[in-house]
Image (cartoon, rainbow, N blue to C red):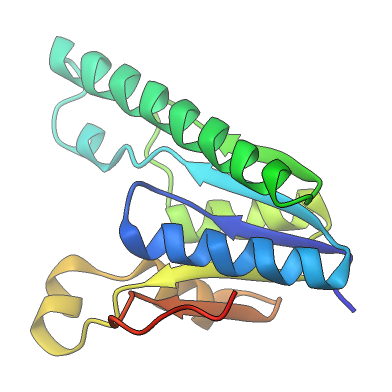
Length: 155
């Protein structure tokens, strides 16, 4: 059904839950897992000439590498073959939802797994939602994994 599953990760608890769900799904289907991370460089929209921009971009790229390495180890420990798709362009603003769709296409993914905070109303409007944007624009099925509600996972 799904030969290749792509999961998007960041440092959020919801992304960790999405990773767990994607690993479980890939293990049960015998699928390859592609772990995607897009460095969120929205800060560059404000001051491209600041040395601070380069420092923040470099720190975010290192953090992304650490996240992806940990996710690969977690998948491998679960017996799931995992690959990496990472984007880190330090001085170009990248729309995360669009980039995830591009990475999924390149990886040949048949489904995207994303964490979602489940925000509504003003908080969602103010903070935006990568998950919502992906759901609206993706040509692939999207599995949204909500933040932990305190119930035990069945994976």
